[in-house]
Image 1: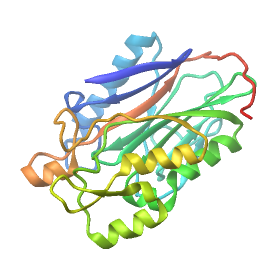
Image 2: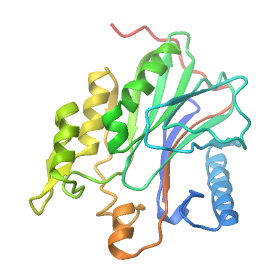
Image 3: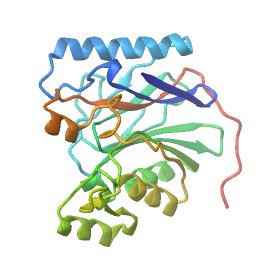
Image 4: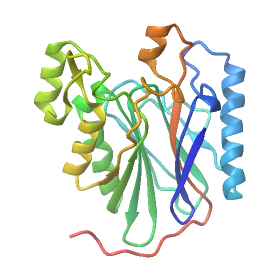
Length: 255
């Protein structure tokens, strides 16, 4: 299951499912198989666009650092440690990916006044929501010239299922009130999608929620479900790609 949407001319966002296989190296899977699956995914994306677009992945550490990529960016085989990336593809074929299995994958498009487009991804788990990874990636997009920003949230664990200790709920919801939640069985919980939506809205970003819970829907990997049911760990991704020579009409800045 790979859902893909064309959101601008030459710009596509998407989310993979379990049938695309685990796309992470750090969960004990065979590295050769992970590389093969990543290559197959890129080939599938290329078949839909007519252009091969490599995906850049991060070493995610539940922080709020944003890596800026562009001319002179690290080589594709180098490791980027961050929880968000922003790229100005400058008319080149390019792609970014964020790995998750309950955290909120966020994919962003920043439109520039000159018709250029910025790409962004963010990994918004509980620590990232607390430390402001959404604020950080939006700030970087604006710093790089985005006059309007649109975001898509992928599947993640919902507030009905994400049970946490009461002190953790209090700490996170103190910073982001929308995170306060109760599980369907009546215990303290966090609603990460609601928190991320609130943070995006507060930053003036038009955002689209997925409405899909990874713990409830076996079409997506879930860290909590793997612990509960003994399933093999895996990670799916949210991604954004730009084909070469993409361009959007120049726009007026937001008031």
